Amino acid sequence: MSLVTRLAAAALRLPAARTGRVTVTRDIPVRVRDGTTLRTDHYAPDLPGAACVLIRTPYGRGGPVRLLGRLVAERGFHVVIQSCRGTYGSGGEFAPLVHERDDGLDTLDWLRRRPWWTGAFGMFGASYQGFVQWAVAAEAGDELRAMVTVVTASATRDSTYAGESFALDTVLTWAELLQAQTVPWLARQWELKRGQPRLVRALTHLPLAEADRVATGVTVPFFQEWLRHHTPDADYWRARVFGDRIGEVCAPVAMVSGWQDIFLPAQLDDYARLRAAGARPRLTVGPWTHGSPGLLVASLREGLDWFAEHLADRPATPPAGAERAPVRVHVGGAGGGWRDLPDWPPPATPTRWHLQPDGGLAPGPPAGGGPDRIRYDPADPTPSLGGPLLVAQRAGAVDNRPVESRPDVLTYTSDPVREPVEMVGPVRAEIHLRSELSYLDVFVRLCDVDRRGRSWNVCDGLVRVEPGRFPADGSGVLRVSVALWPTAHRFAAGHRLRVQVSGGAHPRYARNPGTGEPLGTAVTLRAGWREVLHDRAHPSAVLLPLLTASSTAGR
Image (tube, rainbow, N blue to C red; front, side, top):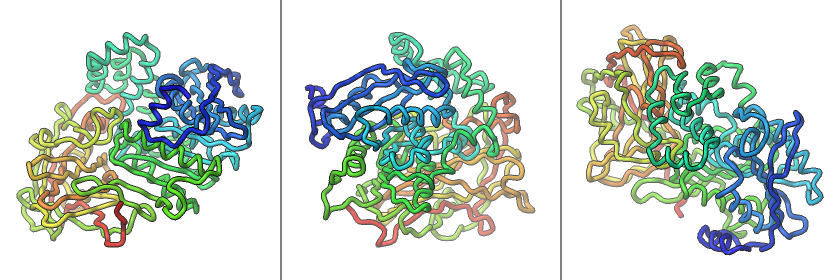
């Protein structure tokens, strides 16, 4: 065992190593059914009968991944790390989600022919490394004994088009990241040092069909395809999502996510599907964004614990008598902390907090009053601030006062709460509005306003409105239901709840041009007024999952 791995294991508080001798073989050619060669590294522990952990990734096999391979191998597992096709020496062209089922199953067939193969393997990985797990999970059979899926989901379509909008920042940033892997290291460092000006320009560029070239200098095929195939019934996505077969997955699944992660709603949908199929997955949701260092540390510990129990038949930690709850979530806010739950979501009482006149927010019925009016201009789109983003440095909870001071953002704020208010579960908003445009977005964000007046985002969501999606009543009022990110948060005594309502959050979501033009080719921008109603006939509200007394047990 090297000094580096000893120091890393101590810093990460990992279980004790089972061997210090690991043999590493790099750049093994694995040939798949169409003749493509996938480059693969093997970390072999000096332990007979060790099971295998497979990691398939488009992000390379060096750096932190190399350290990961050694750390896991030292704890008693063969580790096989493979570059997805078209990345880091593997042949073919990288096309997201297209080849992962066949390539993954062919790699499993290759594993079966290794002399050290025991007939059991697990899979581990975050983000795209989790998509590739779901691509093969239903067909891997009993040999797949454990999965550790981190900030990922079986289906990416709904996350790409959250609320039927387009997750522009995530998709274009990811396209730029993948393309950056093909440029020299020094050139990449210079671009990062300059603040990625090409990407910044691309996020504001129209039409969107040109944004990939602005950001990367080349046309990115999957970016173009995702702009074209955005309708819910698009055949394009049927072969690229794997959620329909979750009920066939035999392997025990551990899930790790964060409250500010881009895939959280989809990952919790996967949890629900597994539970409906009779499975008992383990779920951990912490105070993390997509790339939080704390997330990576927690997922490695969870993964080693899960593999010890399901791949190596060793007791999991904590030992018997202190069994870990099936669901563990971190409650944000003052006085929060970790909670153990029997299931997700926990028993909760959906409580309506109504928008009130003069920017008020209260659990009582709406007090009436006239509507509030704002004008949304896609030429000067309401900016996004923090929240679930791909880049950890810009994601998470931030002070929202800069965006709340804009004239195109409505805010509704409660009185200071006398007692702590704790909520855990799904959050939804019902907004009654009237608009002079038929095409618009509705963005709703829940914030925690502290005693100093700082407004910290807790969760949010956006819905794209078009003719027929939300039928209008006789007075032209639409009742728009907005699913916000699920959350776990505690509003401390003296804090206030705040709800923002606006017409977008750019560039996290592509701006709505207001014209109904196609996503990729729209260039005409049309501004328009909309009114938010909050009278007794139009009770706009957020529905908050307030906990019952028996919902959680503190730790």
